[in-house]
Image 1 (cartoon, rainbow, N blue to C red):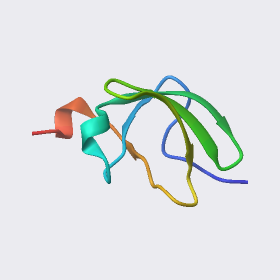
Image 2: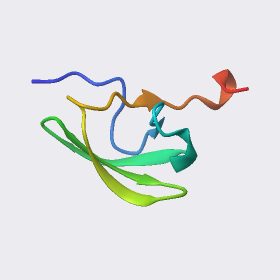
Image 3: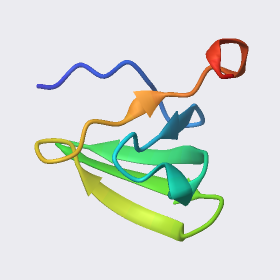
Image 4: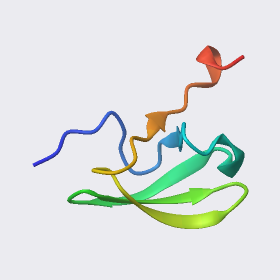
Length: 61
């Protein structure tokens, strides 16, 4: 079981590919998180390989 800092509906970014834009989490199944990103569309992320970060508008410059 994995514990994430986000749930479906939350907004995230991929810190390794910030050009993807802000993404909204669609689903979380095991280590796979499906996210719909602004600039590249829907991606399925393996959280063992990529650490998504929760997007908090207040903390972004």
